Image: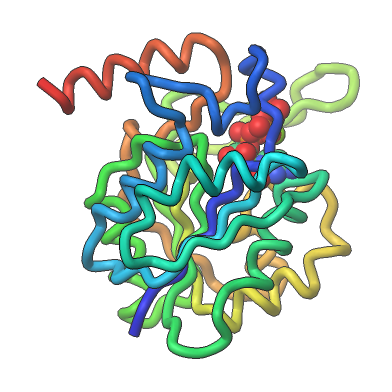
Length: 232
Ligand code: CTP
Ligand code: MG
């Protein structure tokens, strides 16, 4: 069986700023999107047969030209993303083949430097029978719940908290059901959350600090450093 990868890359990157959409911003001379796609391809155990990339409407042609040289034998589909990340993933999911796929990965273009080992852990866990899998790392800050006035409501026990990353891996039928029901969920920030709403148990596997999401300008410095380390 094979894997399909959805890459949500349709965000504008407002927190990062700059002229181009975030996925097209370059680190080490290549766009974040190219780095993300190359990382997925390097996880050979995933046996990736297709990429579906959701991009800002109007940039489909530019992105196809950019990614074509990196897709290798995998099919490459480019779709216009939607207003929210969940909409972009839902649009992309429509192009994932209905047959022959045992795992769908959803991977943020902005988590461009996820190590191959993390991708393979996610795929392996799905193939071992977990219907929904997320990479996770321990939380280092103390996290508090606050109300609208900024007053602390409570402090969850940090040992029970993790920060989750991508790629998140899913049994294809579950991801389709989750998105079919997901319209009612506003503000979903990942796909696992839609599965949780269906009552499905989501499994965590060990993530990596290198799978951080490029969000603010200083994250580009960390990205440059990771890339320089890997190339040295
Ligand atoms: N994304 C998407 N479609 C959207 C919004 C986000 O495909 N409508 C993608 C982004 O391109 C990114 C991932 O979802 O790869 C995670 O989103 P985030 O880090 O929030 O990126 P942006 O939305 O681009 O950034 P910002 O929120 O700062 O504008
Ligand atoms: Mg966003």
